[in-house]
Length: 251
Image (cartoon, rainbow, N blue to C red):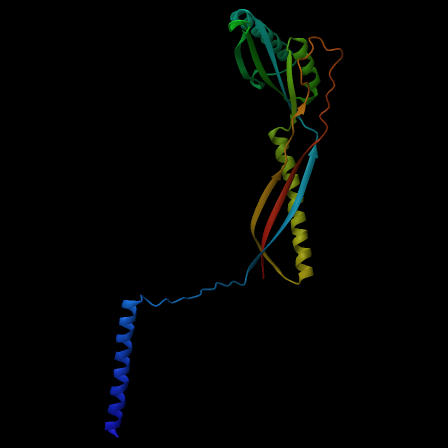
């Protein structure tokens, strides 16, 4: 009996040794045997997203006017003098109606030669242009400012852009934001009720702001030196629009 067990044990040991010898030879000739482990992560909390839109409108409380003066003369110094004198006159008159120095900004000053191509190319004169941007913080002063600019010698009037002071913009954004959040929460509760799930805590909030205030063209040509009647520009209303995306846990 003992002899039979010893023979069985020896055979098993021999088979194990043979297996490892064959495995060693196989890996040397073919390479390592690939092993693949699939790892799957699971969580009881599944994110759920909803979005809500909010908007708030109000009449703009400030305006920005872009204008300029361009003069042409055979001598560059003469063209500069004419341009500078016209700009000085305009700015002085703007200050008389309450526009502050800090709300006036030069956006461009250029000197360009004019050429004649008859026969040989030669310079016939110089064109000097200066562009100014004026911020009107009392929007009721907009029409008066435009008339003052033109009557004082501006021959380029570009566009008027209506907008909000920082304080007014913040107030509008807060109003639109509250509306967007309320709508997103209502939508989430409605969907959860219909789907038969329970909402967990909010784990992420994302805000997207839409649109902006588009510039309103005033004149696309050189302005007349004397307007036929008082300017009447109405700002209307501008709006701030927001989208809020809420991400919930689902319990």
